[in-house]
Image (cartoon, rainbow, N blue to C red; front, side, top):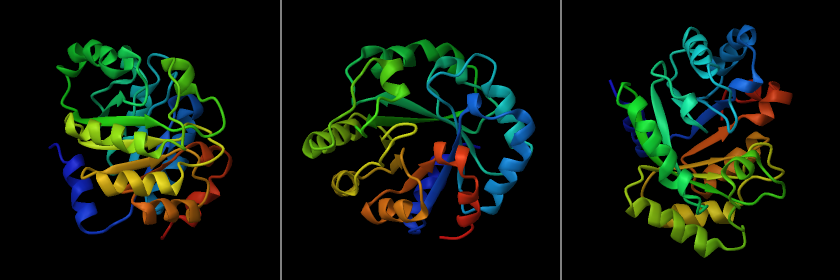
Length: 242
C-alpha cells in the first residue's frame, strides 16, 4: 500500500516533528547495519532515507534489504542516480534540482528512470530539491555541475520553491549539502515555509538536537540527518525523545 506521503501529511496535521535518517550506501558496511538500525529504532526517527550523490551500481538494493530486516520504518530512496532505484524500498523521492539549470537534473535523469520505475511498485513522490550555499563545495555541485543558491537571495529561494509547488511537486527539500559547515539558515526555512503549502524537508549541516529544533520552529516539517552520525552515533541516543 502506498502511504508514505499520506503518513507525512497526517503527522503534519497532528503537529508532529518528523525525523529522517539518511544512510549513504557507500558509507556503511552491511555488517554494521543491524546495530545502526537498532539505534535508529530506539530514536524518534520516522523514516530512513537511502541514497547518495555517487553510489556504485549494486550497493543500494542489498542495503535496503538488510535495513528492512531490522525495522518497520518506511525506507525511502533519496537517489542521486538511476542505479540507486530498487523495488525493495517503500518509496522514492523523485527529485528535481530546481536550484540549478542543468536539464539533466531537472528532467533528463527522470526520463531515463521511467523504464525502471514502470516495473516497480514504489510510491513515487515528486520532490523539488533546492541546494543552498553553506561554505563548502558539495558532492551535489560536482555531480550535477550546478551552483547552490546564495543564502542572501531569500526571495529568489522562496520564489523557486513556490514555482516548484505550482508545477506539481508534492514536497520541497531545502538542502545545505552533505557535510555542510552550516545548516540552511532559519530565516530561509521560515520564509519558504510561510509561502509553501506542501511538506518542507530540511537537511544538511544539522549537527545537534538544538539545531533540529530550530529548523522545526522555523517551519520544517521533516529534518534529515546523516553525515553527522558517521562520527557521532551517540546523537541517536540523544534523540530518544524531542
